[in-house]
Length: 451
Image (cartoon, rainbow, N blue to C red; front, side, top):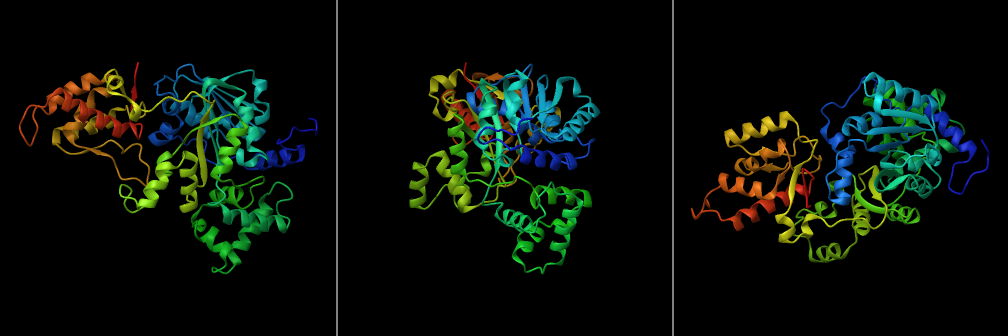
């Protein structure tokens, strides 16, 4: 390989160090037999249906879609992508030969190798595949590159016009203590080459023998309860934090600048409900006047930056992006005529029999139904639906429903107003169903499509 590189690309020496780092310790170090069978939230996040709906407000099938796992590592995310998108073709690429071999073994072990291919290939060289992708997953890679914009540009070059990229960067505010640790271990010569057992042993010895009140130990080792990890997991933690070659942190303004350089448009944070600045206040619906006015005028970038300054708890700035100019208005901008033509889908990763049985049991017992139970962000309150309201959604477990069918079911479930005992009119039922669907669409539990 030539030692000449384009601006923003890894030098041969840096690329070789990073390759050696992951050859000796493929990431993530999840056992080969592990499979997220009931992790509906993980499937939800990695489903092309989720990202495509957020961008285009259309519900698509993953059947025959082409997905790239750029920087597939040991293949765990490739496994998740294959399981979350039945019928799709997954292509995994990674710089590390050992990682690619392990990824192939993982997919073969789970019987999913037929629709998955792996190649030892740099992110910068993915155009050599001669393919265009409907969805690109680039997890835990961009922050290792000297110029994230160059990595985004490489992915943009193989992205279909309506395709989506999921990528992430380390957040410099949340990771500041680990960058201090990396500077320390660089200073004493532990990161001149790909760190191995010797270097990890010195890091462990250092952390064990430092006083507890030492800030670096307190903010990394003790705050992260790292002493509870198994030896194998601890080795991964050290390599991914204290001794990670190429690791860099970024801010929200830098992220948006890289997207601009790559001619890509921000779609959403992947865990968007973990980034709502109003939720940091004691009364989100009753903000102080200054903050109410400030947030009302703030752009998406500004709101996200305010969040990371106030509450830097997200290690990753995990985001979806796409080609510019193809965004479609959300349901909160629809007029009544558009609503009247709507077709309602249950998110495919909620459409499983056990949740349907739970709903039926709640309806029969007259108990609230927790629709958020399979896919719930830990910082949010559960989403409960009153039994007779939840009953309106039951047909969605069989197929998509026109909104008019849900309205009629609502009127059958609630024929009269419980206060006035007057019959529920069509207009009143429409307003109630619209309010319900709006609430659930905010979490993507239901997907609402207008023909």
